[in-house]
Length: 161
Image (cartoon, rainbow, N blue to C red):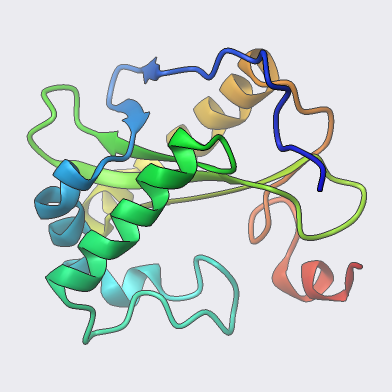
């Protein structure tokens, strides 16, 4: 199995921007993460594809904690990378960014991201997207990154092998 990143690659810990701060998503973020997800359920539907069931209205706090634990562990094992998007003072989770191994040939990684509904309404989504794209290009070792649902529409993405 091909590794997502080289063993000696120094994983970027933080990305500071004017309106947000990106850092590793941890289980200790569950209260703020759960709030961001549950106040934005309808807005977040389809973020991982048209058939994605996440998030569901019956997502429990415990299930979110398990998800965060899974993401935290994957980050530690360097198999995928989940970052929380916090406001600069870290009082509120604004969203998440995920860097996953590719599921389609021709790509080095897949990147997904979301922002809570209130942050979306304030115009954060395109700012996050452009900032993350530049950060990935400058700080990560990938040559060809897929942004499904953004640069590649879901219909086209589904048809790729």
